[in-house]
Length: 250
Image 1 (tube, rainbow, N blue to C red):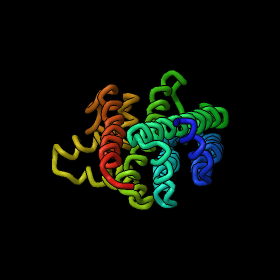
Image 2: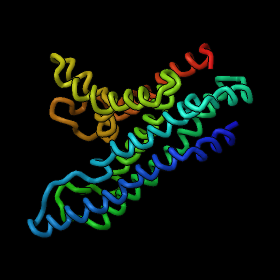
Image 3: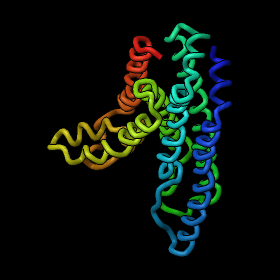
């Protein structure tokens, strides 16, 4: 069953396009690192965001599409009926889809993020203050948290794709979780702006690494709790998907 889902996922052209879009971060990261290094040579030192952090949303959105299209493509073409005929156990079918999506996006994110990190270090070196300033061991929690966030968003996309049966609606919901809601949280009354903001997706990866998000959010969630909250996004989306997929007609 997993082999069949893997074949379906890699046979869809949109999967390749999404992975290529994510891989563009490597090129963007190299260009950014060269630019930052050039400025550092001219000015002595500067502060700049590392590309594996600054371009992370592009990786997240690109690979979230893999999760969304893993199911909405079948609904759009009507092949979901053939899949259910071949595998009438709906929970097993959805579990296989989730396993394949998680594996594909995790491997893709690992490659993109770690290559971007290594290449940016090679190009920029230590010329820019605050830019990739830590050692690999210091940066590893942030890198792994970034990979986990990509996998979680892909599974959220899969779950929302099952619930909505619409590529546009599922992608729009992922964009809302990643960009819209985190932008609204700071405008909530105190102390809810701090409490809710710490649970927003973009703020979880720095907390996993134990980094300071801002003075007001510093230390609000310990790394283990941030990992649990991040995983909770995927669990809630998949739980809703299993419930809907089991009860609703194809």
